Image (cartoon, rainbow, N blue to C red; front, side, top):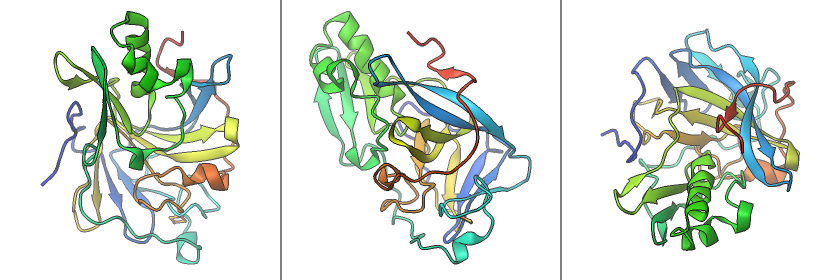
Length: 253
Ligand code: FES
């Protein structure tokens, strides 16, 4: 049975990703695909995303590399057959809210599932998301806590309104991002946005989420999800491109 994360909704059924057992992601439905650069504020803290170079997904399906070894990234070129990686996918259908810890503030709570940390660091600014959640009876602190959780590309951190018990989520169109993290000299995972359905080759579904990051470097221990390993091994996709497109959030303040 397909699970849908609370606060997410499923994209149109033409969009889907098949995570093959020993090779690439097969992308259907031609979602837009672009680099997404993690951009800093003037204190050097992760603050917003900015789009870079766009790549075609016209081929149906488009095979995107998940082993990290392709010479034609972001596409698969067959190198996974000889690459040094373990393609194995985690067993079962893990849900984001399984084993979650909740930090409860006065007006806002933040759920935290560290398994999904992709080391994007949006939660560090302004004293950190947990200190901000503690002060969520103050409007500025509350807004900042919600902003930081909403910027977490993997939804490891999700902010909830205590009054409605609903999560805060940016509205994303079905789209894919190649995360670039120049501050640490690494490239990150594939950011899957807007409730695109993902399944294994045998059709077994993964939980549908508004935002989730899957591995591109081939070294995550939690495949298909990114576990931040790219940051420690300083993996780079070597794609050209500059941050010059649209930003998330749209207004960077
Ligand atoms: S998955 Fe095919 S080259 Fe990486």
